Image (cartoon, rainbow, N blue to C red; front, side):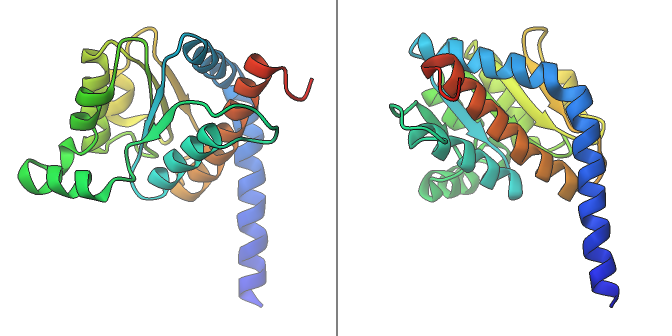
Length: 197
């Protein structure tokens, strides 16, 4: 059956992408996890945003922080800016969809908080505006991207961290973003609570 062959191909493509990502992303993921852990120790918070599947990933990360990852531990402050439909639709209606995250960051973001921005293309206008707003609020940006990084890469400061998946296929990028999120959670728990050591 053709569908069986296609499923096998998808798994093989995923494995290739993950293998390449493991070779090139280990250091930026590790650095990002350590930066988040330090921010949390300093009573800072993480604001997360993305569109579509990346919105789901932003919510995934926030849920792992607020509830728990693999070990019992205190809740950690993270906010997914993708979840408040009243806020998102009012901003989109009264202003522009490009501002649905940036206006929230202007209200909630504080110096030394972290923005976790997810965009497979690096071209989403509302994510670009979110990064600009985060910089205005003196926040560190951790960007999960793919493709060539898009316009998002050029917006990042020297202290920001880009975790760019080496793929041009959106599905593969999102799959690796899921692993990156779990790596970040593991690093945070290990750094803050010595979990899993």
